[in-house]
Length: 280
Ligand code: GDP
Image (cartoon, rainbow, N blue to C red; front, side):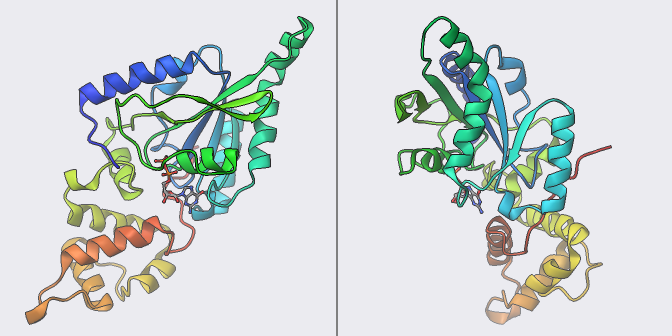
């Protein structure tokens, strides 16, 4: 389920996250590898006090690997611990190794006092970046339900991954970066922000234009666009003609066209595309 981020939702979700953060040693922060800027939460960093953060660029299977490598380099230069990952197909044991590494100082300190510490981990991210999929990957079964609801207290129980590793059973929901219009639009493309609050035709036109700028060949082929210079409604009409989204009487079926373009992009049908490259 996706969300309308009213201020009340945002405040409630923030309080909930603060409470959750106080109970963990390690935060796995998930963002979408196709949008590493737009899909990160603007406030999480400020809320981290005593926890180690592992930034995971998830859905790396959908992003351009060369661009992902540039992001990884830039984040590491800034001192962040970061890895590319695909929660839907990646190895749980990689995640476990990253957690061990992140927690090793706290574990060693506790050992000096003769205590074998239980490390507590939370997975956090904006909607639809793969939090539940990653929790299930770590746990090895389906404990987390996919979908998010803001401001609803979930069970927040601990799941034992090993005798010394516990995972919060429900994800830490983060609110998206909505102050930046470009970021907000891109979050709609990936299904992180409800797209029924925006003009779907405009959203689809914007997406097609961004995709054509990044990878014209595969995108033109997928959506049967013969003229990549077309803009606005003409671009949508070209896709309708090419893919046969026509109504009786020859009118364009914009609704179906928009749904198919958004669905196929979200499913990676246009190939591996990154919509953001690091600056500098
Ligand atoms: P959440 O809202 O953050 O908990 O996200 P979900 O775990 O519900 O995942 C949202 C959608 O993304 C689902 O359809 C998942 O199957 C899909 N998904 C999650 N991780 C990956 C990934 O690494 N690669 C791809 N291609 N799809 C993924």
